[in-house]
Length: 504
Image 1 (cartoon, rainbow, N blue to C red):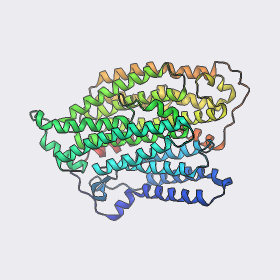
Image 2: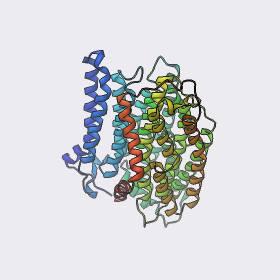
Image 3: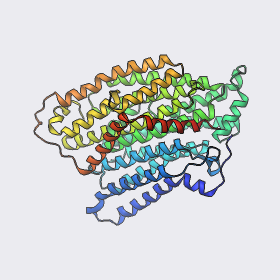
Image 4: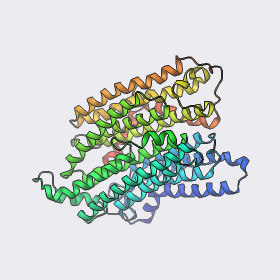
């Protein structure tokens, strides 16, 4: 078991991104209070610029050696994998700030950006949590902030409904997850994930006969924890909130919910499964549960996306399917052989990086289109290529990446996920993933066809692209294309980070 590092400097470096984000949030509050109305639109630039600087600092912070990475009494682990996921979450917040700048009722609201920064802080703590207390505190910091963002437009009935649904379902599943965590603590008498993992390996070694009665509380705890994570990543059958929340929330908030929340949740899910449950008898149980969730999430998400006519609801069901693909990598983590340690974690990490960029590009286009037309219907996107070719091109890049078509990075991401499954003897799961990718290709290409082939009476009405949106689309689409062409160095970095996670 790792011994916590008591060095004060190591602890400060570990939480430096969160400290800087807190200072940024306080600065935004004061800027919003004391700046005149005419200058409040610049808040988005301040938030995006500040988060970009913090992301760079996060990348440059030195990571301690493997045996020195537990800090703050063992509640956090400061490793390269945590840094990568923190950069994802911070980057999602920065691009969302740019997307929100020209949105009615959001762009000049300092409190919107402040809540988003608080959510980012919660996501960053989730990426490095190594203790049950920190797991739940970080999860709730992110979740409560997202409830506020989804229902931020109090005068809008759809936004209020989305916030209320998200809050009620989220509170219910959080209670289930908390009960599961309390069972795990009560059985092992440990709150640190590494101590829990050591205890479970000693009590339930893989090569020992199965003691069903003794393992029942652990299995019950495991199921409850997976229920909580299933809701956060919108996996079937815990997906029921996703379409309504995605459709009703302000589009910039939806972009942030669909990216930052999912990236942070997958970071925490992989960390908990590997550290607490890997190498003990419950391993096979959670691998089977995760594999089953992957299959039903991919299949149901894609099938329900086919008849959708609202672009935000379609992307909601698409995100459910995308969670299923990422769960293939999580299942591969538990089933992987010693010859390829960390390949499943690296595949999930790389795929979530791509997913964050892709969804931000897609929602950036949706925000612009909705602001210009007042519609979220796919049919109303007819002739978009003639109204604004850059917008149609950006949406096409995002859709091709979600579908897994080269040269977009989604193709490489799916390849790594399916390869991890094959290497872990989960060939059947990879085959189901490939078949689902073929199904998804249809509804993604339908949108491309509507934008480039279908005609509209409004084709002559050009859609202007403001400077913040240009930055957001260039960063997100450029990242998708870049990762699709130069993927190996980034994946190798993710694999090196993943290997360190298995060091106990």
